[in-house]
Figure 1 (spheres, rainbow, N blue to C red):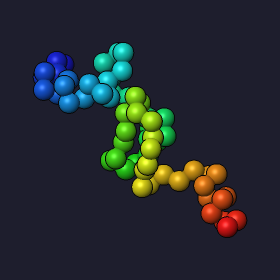
Figure 2: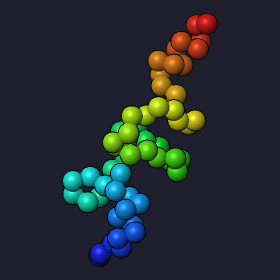
Figure 3: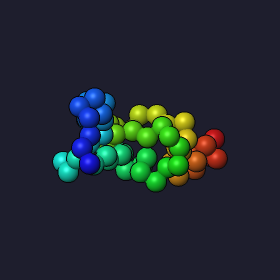
Figure 4: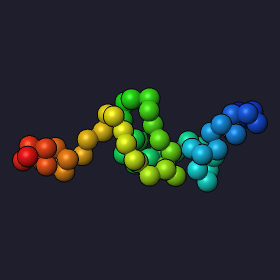
Length: 60
């Protein structure tokens, strides 16, 4: 199945070496539609909170 040129340009940031979409390792298992590319560093996600952040919030 061929993809249009427009689709490739829009998804170029998400496409890996094999031409398939790849997401950030944290976003991979997330059910929310706000997924980020594997090329990006996860800066802020409203749906993600690490275990470390939860422990720090409880302490203080």
